[in-house]
Length: 310
Ligand SMILES: [Zn+2]
Image (cartoon, rainbow, N blue to C red):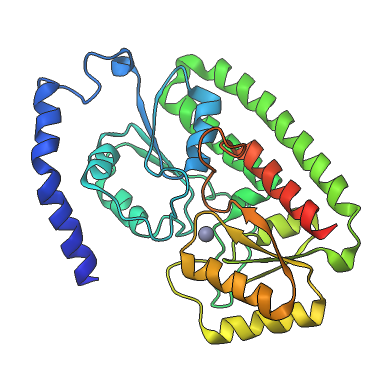
């Protein structure tokens, strides 16, 4: 903890001059002064998935700012001083909640001056649990739960920008329809894979809700969070699952630490299963590579799973 705090303040000192420069250049006004977005309210989104959802609803009406970039891991992300400035300047912060944004969440609790909406904070989202009883935060992978994210984001946007409520309502309806279509396609395609082959083995435990939604059994190397390295016991546990169930493939993930993905590759070698491809879990893929929106990411993941398990 001490070392993290030390690094944080070191970074703060190194960037303080640059930050002052930006503020001075803006003549003491907001960082957006002089640009077209100066009149727009600022919405800060924690993950790339939430940022995409917000862009779908309000790309032309609000100043949407994402904290994380593609490929970054929210469980271990360390905020920069600029992120902290952004957090305190936001009119609205949209976040996942359920401790997905571990360190980031603590700073948001302390520094946010605008409204904060946790998109999982809804009775209709029935959370799955980890072995230690903590709720699993990866609820966006169940399309029905993601529709609740959509609804809550829309409601929060309307609260800070009621003049555009009709726009947000219409876009939300159109998006829900697109989501329904992908959900229906995915369920149908996965139902064609024999049940005993529908086993998903990944590097961190992010896919319980995907498993629920699409009727796939799920096992992972790491826990729900990626903060700790996998243990030799984790590896033995997974090898046993693979040998007992005859799982055909294991999957690496784009946003987790290398040690988790390395272990997946080793387990594949020792059990004779194959590496079925790369899934996106807690972050979207890079721009222009086929998984840079929630909908294309879900499609990419489902196609990868179907291709490897069928
Ligand atoms: Zn995760």
